[in-house]
Image (tube, rainbow, N blue to C red):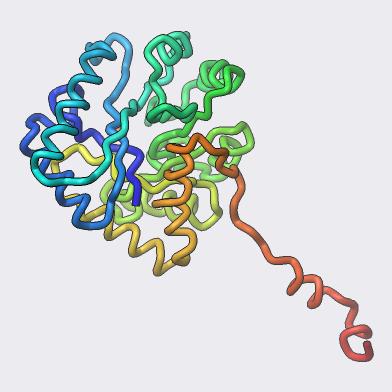
Length: 261
Ligand SMILES: [Fe+2]
């Protein structure tokens, strides 16, 4: 499994406040079967103040500490970028992508995507970036009308769903919305959004639920195959639910053909 969204890098945003806790959480992840993780610290211009060099040195220090602790989990750089006017300049200048890829994890205002949301995202698409909207199911506008997620897909925006959403950690409405996104194939990634405040087991619990309620293949796509494509900077399909037509074609033959031919 590969987790593309968490706040485990210590002392940089509102995530982990101590490297010992981060190592403990990384151990829990590795023991459960997570082999790679993107440490997506919040990037919110004017709110969190750190330089790219500061981020890189913290990441490299944590990777060294993880090795010293006997862990093999691979740490990738990443950011959760708050969409603001002109954010494309920061993304270009500081390479605020997931690892070396063109995929960018983005977020906006949870109480409703602002009217200029698309206007601020389109420059990313035009520049060849591949935006992924973090925890789309937590947005009020998507809770009110989940098919808005499909509109995002239609505009070349991928979607990531939080493990805790599927379990009900953000309330019943978010839980229902998350399952609607999964059922319709509108979400592409299941991630923890872990802040080192609770048991990482929630992620594994959500993976199991996904495999039980949908199927193992979908679980594999969302927890492994699509996240792996990021590291390889490969294209991920916006639409991936394949409907097998042959069965329907057979059934849709006229009744007289089914009876006599
Ligand atoms: Fe996050």
